Image 1 (tube, rainbow, N blue to C red):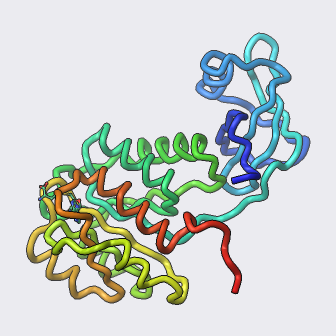
Image 2: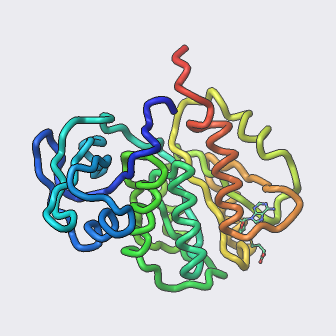
Length: 254
Ligand code: SAH
């Protein structure tokens, strides 16, 4: 990725970004820049808000960072591929991990679905959004993945776009090469992709039967072993990005 500056710290802010604008820093941001990164007045960072691209900015403030002076546009705003990571929520630390990995792997939306064996009934969406921002700052992306409210699996199936490819990670599927199954779909008209991973307890039989009737379905085995859901997340998103997504290098326009 030649045009990404991996050295400069990146900070997400909510404020609009234009040349010459000034962005006030809240206490956490001032602490992160001043005490964690030990930066001060005049130091340069990259700042983005998910809408206006990524800008070079200079820290200013007397004793500690108080605000940013936005200077030049570093990278114009881009978009995320239409890749929805749909998952049965896990408990705290593993959910934090799974959200961050899905963002690093390029998911544009995170959709918690409540299934029969999901062991979590409430999801802290604010905590998920904080993890999305932290992962976006770290992995160099300019957009923030959407964090959708949890929804029952059957309700999500009823409202998902039927033209989306549905990659159903099924622990009960016969072992078969997932890369070959995904590669076979390359070149099909570009459409959104929904990737579904179940809970620790797996999918219930009636859920599996309903899933296998879905339009646009690709039932995927992730090998002969049972993966933890957060392992499955990284594995399937790597396969999808390699076969159908943006790991294949810049778009080859025919
Ligand atoms: N019943 C098992 C399955 C849970 S694994 C258990 O209790 O451990 C959690 C989720 O990860 C599954 O629902 C599935 O979506 C995915 N997964 C795990 N291993 C898989 C595999 N070998 N093939 C396909 N999906 C898998």
